[in-house]
Amino acid sequence: MTELGVNFTEYDTVGNATEIIDPVGNETRFVYDDRDRNTQEIITTDVSGTPTELTRTYEYDAVGNRIEATDRLGRTRQFIYDGLNRQTAELWLDRNGDITRTIASTYDIASRLTRVNDPDSSYQYEYDDRDRLTVVDNAGTPGAPQVELSYNYDANGNLLSVSEEIDEAAAGVTTYSYDDLNRLETQTQSGAGVSEKRVDYTYTPTGQFESISRYSDLAGTQFAIESVYDYDELNRLTNLTHSNLTEAIAFYDLTYDSAGRINSIDSVDGLVEYHTMRSGS
Image (cartoon, rainbow, N blue to C red; front, side, top):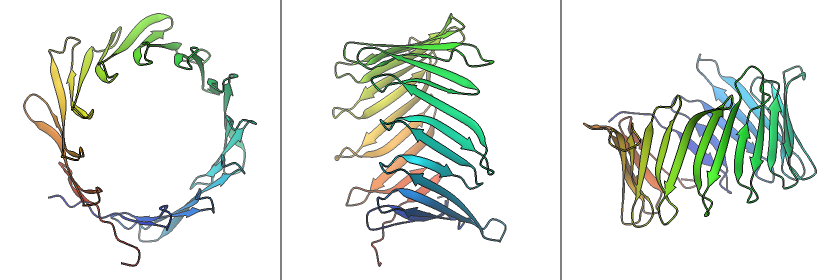
Protein backbone atom coordinates (compact mmCIF):
# COMPACT_ATOMS: atom_id res chain seq x y z
CA MET A 1 0.00 0.00 0.00
CA THR A 2 1.35 3.44 -0.93
CA GLU A 3 1.47 6.00 1.88
CA LEU A 4 -0.10 9.21 0.61
CA GLY A 5 0.05 11.30 3.78
CA VAL A 6 -2.74 12.83 5.84
CA ASN A 7 -4.91 15.91 5.25
CA PHE A 8 -6.67 17.42 8.27
CA THR A 9 -9.78 19.59 7.84
CA GLU A 10 -11.58 21.44 10.64
CA TYR A 11 -15.06 22.95 10.47
CA ASP A 12 -17.03 25.51 12.44
CA THR A 13 -20.42 24.84 14.01
CA VAL A 14 -22.32 25.56 10.77
CA GLY A 15 -20.13 23.36 8.58
CA ASN A 16 -17.74 25.89 7.05
CA ALA A 17 -14.20 24.57 6.60
CA THR A 18 -11.99 26.71 8.85
CA GLU A 19 -8.60 25.04 8.50
CA ILE A 20 -6.87 22.55 6.21
CA ILE A 21 -3.42 21.11 6.92
CA ASP A 22 -1.86 19.08 4.11
CA PRO A 23 0.61 16.16 4.43
CA VAL A 24 3.68 18.44 4.36
CA GLY A 25 2.36 20.86 6.95
CA ASN A 26 1.04 23.67 4.77
CA GLU A 27 -1.88 25.31 6.53
CA THR A 28 -4.85 27.14 5.01
CA ARG A 29 -7.24 29.02 7.28
CA PHE A 30 -10.62 30.32 6.15
CA VAL A 31 -12.40 33.34 7.64
CA TYR A 32 -16.13 34.04 7.16
CA ASP A 33 -18.43 36.96 7.82
CA ASP A 34 -21.71 36.75 9.74
CA ARG A 35 -23.44 35.55 6.55
CA ASP A 36 -21.02 32.62 6.14
CA ARG A 37 -19.33 34.21 3.13
CA ASN A 38 -15.63 33.47 2.75
CA THR A 39 -13.80 36.77 3.30
CA GLN A 40 -10.22 35.63 3.80
CA GLU A 41 -7.91 32.70 3.11
CA ILE A 42 -4.60 32.68 4.98
CA ILE A 43 -2.06 30.20 3.64
CA THR A 44 1.04 29.38 5.67
CA THR A 45 3.82 27.43 3.96
CA ASP A 46 7.16 26.25 5.31
CA VAL A 47 8.91 24.89 2.23
CA SER A 48 12.29 26.51 2.94
CA GLY A 49 12.18 26.18 6.70
CA THR A 50 10.94 29.75 7.13
CA PRO A 51 7.17 30.12 7.51
CA THR A 52 5.61 32.27 4.79
CA GLU A 53 2.09 33.65 5.09
CA LEU A 54 0.04 34.43 1.98
CA THR A 55 -3.45 35.90 2.02
CA ARG A 56 -6.44 36.06 -0.32
CA THR A 57 -9.32 38.42 0.53
CA TYR A 58 -12.89 38.73 -0.75
CA GLU A 59 -15.46 41.52 -0.45
CA TYR A 60 -19.22 41.50 -1.09
CA ASP A 61 -21.98 44.03 -1.64
CA ALA A 62 -25.16 44.33 0.41
CA VAL A 63 -27.01 41.69 -1.62
CA GLY A 64 -24.20 39.12 -1.54
CA ASN A 65 -22.48 39.67 -4.88
CA ARG A 66 -18.73 39.26 -4.71
CA ILE A 67 -17.34 42.66 -5.71
CA GLU A 68 -13.62 42.24 -5.11
CA ALA A 69 -11.03 39.47 -4.84
CA THR A 70 -7.38 40.08 -4.03
CA ASP A 71 -4.86 37.30 -4.57
CA ARG A 72 -1.69 36.35 -2.70
CA LEU A 73 0.40 38.71 -4.85
CA GLY A 74 -1.74 41.74 -4.17
CA ARG A 75 -3.47 41.68 -7.56
CA THR A 76 -7.17 42.53 -7.47
CA ARG A 77 -10.22 41.65 -9.52
CA GLN A 78 -13.25 43.90 -9.20
CA PHE A 79 -16.74 42.78 -10.25
CA ILE A 80 -19.41 45.25 -11.38
CA TYR A 81 -23.15 44.49 -11.53
CA ASP A 82 -26.21 46.16 -12.99
CA GLY A 83 -29.51 46.81 -11.22
CA LEU A 84 -30.56 43.19 -11.82
CA ASN A 85 -27.40 41.85 -10.16
CA ARG A 86 -25.98 40.65 -13.47
CA GLN A 87 -22.22 40.91 -13.72
CA THR A 88 -21.44 43.47 -16.43
CA ALA A 89 -17.71 43.93 -15.99
CA GLU A 90 -14.65 42.36 -14.41
CA LEU A 91 -11.63 44.59 -13.90
CA TRP A 92 -8.11 43.28 -13.31
CA LEU A 93 -5.84 45.57 -11.31
CA ASP A 94 -2.14 45.22 -10.58
CA ARG A 95 -0.55 45.83 -7.18
CA ASN A 96 -0.46 49.56 -7.91
CA GLY A 97 -4.20 49.69 -8.57
CA ASP A 98 -3.83 50.20 -12.33
CA ILE A 99 -6.36 48.42 -14.57
CA THR A 100 -4.63 45.84 -16.77
CA ARG A 101 -7.69 44.14 -18.30
CA THR A 102 -11.43 44.66 -18.59
CA ILE A 103 -13.92 41.87 -19.34
CA ALA A 104 -17.37 43.16 -20.34
CA SER A 105 -20.63 41.19 -20.44
CA THR A 106 -23.98 42.16 -21.97
CA TYR A 107 -27.43 40.57 -21.69
CA ASP A 108 -30.72 40.58 -23.57
CA ILE A 109 -34.11 41.53 -22.16
CA ALA A 110 -34.52 37.96 -20.85
CA SER A 111 -31.23 38.26 -18.91
CA ARG A 112 -29.47 35.80 -21.21
CA LEU A 113 -25.78 36.41 -21.73
CA THR A 114 -25.33 37.69 -25.31
CA ARG A 115 -21.75 38.95 -25.45
CA VAL A 116 -18.47 38.70 -23.54
CA ASN A 117 -15.37 40.50 -24.70
CA ASP A 118 -11.93 41.53 -23.50
CA PRO A 119 -8.93 42.94 -25.39
CA ASP A 120 -8.01 39.48 -26.73
CA SER A 121 -11.36 37.91 -27.57
CA SER A 122 -15.04 38.41 -28.27
CA TYR A 123 -17.88 35.89 -27.99
CA GLN A 124 -21.53 36.22 -28.98
CA TYR A 125 -24.35 33.93 -27.84
CA GLU A 126 -27.76 33.26 -29.43
CA TYR A 127 -30.77 31.41 -28.04
CA ASP A 128 -34.05 29.94 -29.25
CA ASP A 129 -37.50 30.78 -27.89
CA ARG A 130 -37.04 28.13 -25.19
CA ASP A 131 -33.90 29.87 -23.87
CA ARG A 132 -31.64 27.13 -25.20
CA LEU A 133 -28.22 28.11 -26.46
CA THR A 134 -28.14 27.79 -30.27
CA VAL A 135 -25.01 29.64 -31.44
CA VAL A 136 -21.63 30.62 -29.99
CA ASP A 137 -19.51 32.79 -32.30
CA ASN A 138 -16.09 34.33 -31.72
CA ALA A 139 -16.39 36.86 -34.56
CA GLY A 140 -14.31 39.92 -33.71
CA THR A 141 -11.60 38.02 -31.86
CA PRO A 142 -8.34 39.53 -33.12
CA GLY A 143 -5.74 37.28 -34.74
CA ALA A 144 -7.87 34.12 -34.59
CA PRO A 145 -9.99 32.17 -37.10
CA GLN A 146 -13.72 32.68 -36.77
CA VAL A 147 -15.24 29.69 -35.00
CA GLU A 148 -18.99 29.21 -34.81
CA LEU A 149 -20.67 26.46 -32.79
CA SER A 150 -24.29 25.57 -33.54
CA TYR A 151 -26.45 23.60 -31.09
CA ASN A 152 -29.53 21.53 -32.02
CA TYR A 153 -32.09 19.91 -29.72
CA ASP A 154 -34.88 17.35 -29.88
CA ALA A 155 -38.49 17.93 -28.83
CA ASN A 156 -37.64 16.95 -25.24
CA GLY A 157 -34.86 19.51 -25.00
CA ASN A 158 -32.03 17.00 -25.24
CA LEU A 159 -28.94 18.24 -27.05
CA LEU A 160 -28.71 16.38 -30.38
CA SER A 161 -25.64 17.88 -32.00
CA VAL A 162 -22.93 20.52 -31.80
CA SER A 163 -21.60 21.54 -35.22
CA GLU A 164 -18.44 23.55 -35.74
CA GLU A 165 -17.56 25.93 -38.56
CA ILE A 166 -14.11 27.47 -38.91
CA ASP A 167 -13.97 30.50 -41.19
CA GLU A 168 -17.35 29.36 -42.57
CA ALA A 169 -16.04 25.89 -43.50
CA ALA A 170 -17.69 22.84 -41.91
CA ALA A 171 -15.47 21.18 -39.33
CA GLY A 172 -16.22 18.83 -36.44
CA VAL A 173 -19.62 17.51 -35.41
CA THR A 174 -20.54 15.94 -32.07
CA THR A 175 -23.82 14.01 -31.99
CA TYR A 176 -25.85 12.69 -29.06
CA SER A 177 -28.60 10.06 -28.92
CA TYR A 178 -30.82 9.09 -26.01
CA ASP A 179 -32.90 6.18 -24.76
CA ASP A 180 -36.61 6.29 -23.96
CA LEU A 181 -35.82 7.75 -20.53
CA ASN A 182 -33.86 10.65 -22.09
CA ARG A 183 -30.57 9.25 -20.83
CA LEU A 184 -27.52 9.75 -23.01
CA GLU A 185 -26.94 6.52 -24.91
CA THR A 186 -24.37 7.27 -27.63
CA GLN A 187 -22.03 10.15 -28.38
CA THR A 188 -19.96 10.47 -31.57
CA GLN A 189 -17.42 12.90 -33.01
CA SER A 190 -16.47 13.21 -36.66
CA GLY A 191 -15.82 15.75 -39.40
CA ALA A 192 -12.96 17.60 -41.03
CA GLY A 193 -9.82 17.52 -38.92
CA VAL A 194 -11.43 15.38 -36.22
CA SER A 195 -10.46 11.82 -35.30
CA GLU A 196 -13.59 9.68 -35.41
CA LYS A 197 -14.70 8.38 -32.05
CA ARG A 198 -17.74 6.97 -30.30
CA VAL A 199 -18.85 6.54 -26.69
CA ASP A 200 -21.68 4.22 -25.58
CA TYR A 201 -23.40 4.45 -22.19
CA THR A 202 -25.40 1.78 -20.34
CA TYR A 203 -27.31 2.10 -17.09
CA THR A 204 -28.40 -0.02 -14.15
CA PRO A 205 -32.12 -0.56 -13.46
CA THR A 206 -31.91 2.32 -10.96
CA GLY A 207 -30.49 4.71 -13.56
CA GLN A 208 -26.84 4.79 -12.53
CA PHE A 209 -23.97 4.33 -14.94
CA GLU A 210 -23.26 0.65 -15.58
CA SER A 211 -20.61 1.07 -18.24
CA ILE A 212 -19.05 3.64 -20.56
CA SER A 213 -17.40 2.15 -23.66
CA ARG A 214 -15.12 4.18 -25.90
CA TYR A 215 -14.21 3.40 -29.52
CA SER A 216 -11.91 4.93 -32.11
CA ASP A 217 -14.47 4.65 -34.90
CA LEU A 218 -18.11 5.60 -35.45
CA ALA A 219 -19.42 2.04 -35.82
CA GLY A 220 -18.21 0.94 -32.38
CA THR A 221 -15.92 -1.82 -33.66
CA GLN A 222 -12.51 -0.40 -32.68
CA PHE A 223 -12.53 -0.77 -28.91
CA ALA A 224 -10.37 1.59 -26.85
CA ILE A 225 -11.32 1.91 -23.18
CA GLU A 226 -14.24 0.74 -21.04
CA SER A 227 -15.28 2.00 -17.62
CA VAL A 228 -17.36 -0.36 -15.47
CA TYR A 229 -19.25 0.71 -12.34
CA ASP A 230 -20.31 -1.52 -9.42
CA TYR A 231 -22.67 -0.61 -6.60
CA ASP A 232 -23.78 -2.05 -3.28
CA GLU A 233 -27.36 -2.79 -2.24
CA LEU A 234 -27.76 0.88 -1.26
CA ASN A 235 -26.78 1.96 -4.79
CA ARG A 236 -23.50 3.42 -3.57
CA LEU A 237 -20.54 3.20 -5.92
CA THR A 238 -18.14 0.52 -4.67
CA ASN A 239 -15.84 0.07 -7.65
CA LEU A 240 -14.91 1.89 -10.83
CA THR A 241 -12.49 0.15 -13.20
CA HIS A 242 -11.06 1.50 -16.46
CA SER A 243 -9.78 -1.22 -18.81
CA ASN A 244 -8.36 -1.56 -22.30
CA LEU A 245 -8.43 -4.77 -24.34
CA THR A 246 -5.83 -6.54 -22.20
CA GLU A 247 -5.83 -5.14 -18.68
CA ALA A 248 -7.24 -2.78 -16.10
CA ILE A 249 -5.39 0.53 -16.30
CA ALA A 250 -7.02 2.22 -13.32
CA PHE A 251 -9.39 1.23 -10.53
CA TYR A 252 -11.09 2.80 -7.53
CA ASP A 253 -12.54 0.74 -4.65
CA LEU A 254 -14.76 2.66 -2.24
CA THR A 255 -15.99 1.76 1.24
CA TYR A 256 -18.47 3.58 3.46
CA ASP A 257 -19.08 4.00 7.16
CA SER A 258 -22.36 3.33 8.96
CA ALA A 259 -23.54 6.88 8.25
CA GLY A 260 -23.06 6.46 4.50
CA ARG A 261 -19.95 8.61 4.29
CA ILE A 262 -16.98 7.54 2.19
CA ASN A 263 -14.59 5.71 4.49
CA SER A 264 -11.80 4.89 2.03
CA ILE A 265 -10.82 4.98 -1.63
CA ASP A 266 -8.22 2.47 -2.80
CA SER A 267 -6.63 2.96 -6.23
CA VAL A 268 -3.42 2.38 -8.16
CA ASP A 269 -2.14 5.55 -6.49
CA GLY A 270 -2.64 4.21 -2.99
CA LEU A 271 -5.20 4.14 -0.20
CA VAL A 272 -7.00 7.29 0.93
CA GLU A 273 -8.90 7.08 4.22
CA TYR A 274 -11.37 9.60 5.62
CA HIS A 275 -11.89 10.11 9.35
CA THR A 276 -14.45 12.28 11.11
CA MET A 277 -13.77 13.51 14.63
CA ARG A 278 -16.44 15.10 16.77
CA SER A 279 -15.70 18.48 18.29
CA GLY A 280 -13.78 18.07 21.51
CA SER A 281 -12.63 14.53 20.76
